[in-house]
Image (cartoon, rainbow, N blue to C red):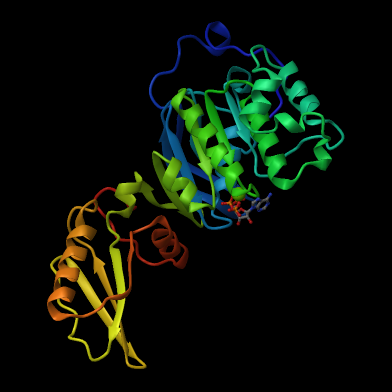
Length: 336
Ligand SMILES: Nc1ncnc2c1ncn2[C@@H]1O[C@H](COP(=O)(O)OP(=O)(O)OP(=O)(O)O)[C@@H](O)[C@H]1O
Ligand SMILES: [Mg+2]
């Protein structure tokens, strides 16, 4: 987002004292395209230094929510506030303090990478240096290359470079790592983590669930305009079981009942496929308890547990259920 005037942090131009509490506040947000309500009552807060991940199905309303936060889209209901301000009416006060990596980037193909960063620097009062910015996003060796010659992942890195040029206090990142190779994604994660540690409030959308699992302090899963699940990762996963799977010959003794677990066995072609779902108990230790009991049973009965595997509850389990429109397990205070 290029801006054209000086950046102010305090004083009369921004309306007085610094804002306290969450710097991003979304309340009952509703957005529509004509008659179609794309966002149907979304609420969340983001505090300084906090990373909030907005996940969800294609068309769930994530980009629309970000556009409302940028002031590009007028809500038809509810409100969005940044530092207590309305991003549509008080753009001037928010300039430089809020920046974004948009899903669709808008750079000039004929400029070089360094020229593009230079252009963004020129319109801000306290910009980071071009070298520093390109270094942070791993584009230092592409400084003289024209934007049109960048690969998809390199363009994404340039978008990120432009977003951090202004030293923003709020960063809105719409799928910032799409198209990046695994190494670039990891270095981008490091950059994002560093920015959060420096106190930046970050809203991140991503379809890479591992990215959210690693980075997010809190996350929300959206589907068809609504937040279906929200909380810290451990809270979101609390209602979901860890699964232990293995095979035995069909002639082996039947798998034992274990405390806090459900067991399912399917027989085919002389083999028995067994799945335990460990639901109850402390999520950090419960898999160990179930696994220890199982291996003790297997030793006693002299049964080999073939292809033994442990699948921890993951965001993917939750995501797929939300996408299917299934009922979500509701650990207290998490699902809505
Ligand atoms: N300019 C537009 N005009 C009409 N409908 C739109 C427009 N932009 C988005 N929509 C619709 O609004 C809904 C939400 O779109 P949005 O882009 O916010 O979803 P998203 O969660 O960002 O999806 P994705 O994960 O695919 O990026 C979709 O049904 C989409 O088709
Ligand atoms: Mg989107």
